[in-house]
Length: 295
Image (cartoon, rainbow, N blue to C red):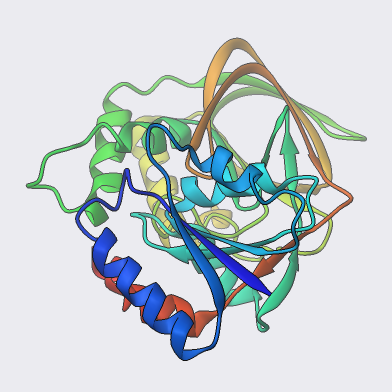
């Protein structure tokens, strides 16, 4: 098996040389056949991955959840395996995978949303605003680990509910909602446990809907997600399905595993073909030395 490490240079500028050194050291010690690729303005992640589309390699995304998502989308309809080393600010798929995956090679459901794909969480409403606005917070005075919390406050100051229609196979739900989250994995927002009973490989996904309420109540419900305690609230509803159509009267921004997607209508379904995911905790710990957990 050959390993192609694809490093996100845009978010790892200060750490990239150290990360490359550790990848090389681990690979040599463990007898890996490997190459290292670094994305840049002239060599996108998608272009790098597509070079190997006819191979049967393990393509290892080195970066955050958005980087994993970009590699995943480039791997669709190939026989390559998805690997990852979490070096971002959120690393929420790692949190999900570390609870579910017990082997080096694991099957994982892939969720299609319009013409894109994801494996962790897609959110709509205030949660998407929080996630999308987090990247706008550049102050060095605010640690990366706290930028999500700061974005929560900023987003609540501008909060307005969204009107959604959710179409399940045998049910429709319509109303004004603070947020809708579609969950294959269990974590988003740098550790918020949105889906406490998630499964990455059960051909289903969980849907959480939070009804509109006053800002104080919504804040309490959102913050309770940190420890997965939000299901106790009457305005929080959970559904489980393998197919969902989400419609809004206005075009809205969503956040799909760290990537933005705007539309008035989202067709969401579990794909028949699963993604093989390489989860090497020794590799992850060696390369990151768990530094991202302290950010």
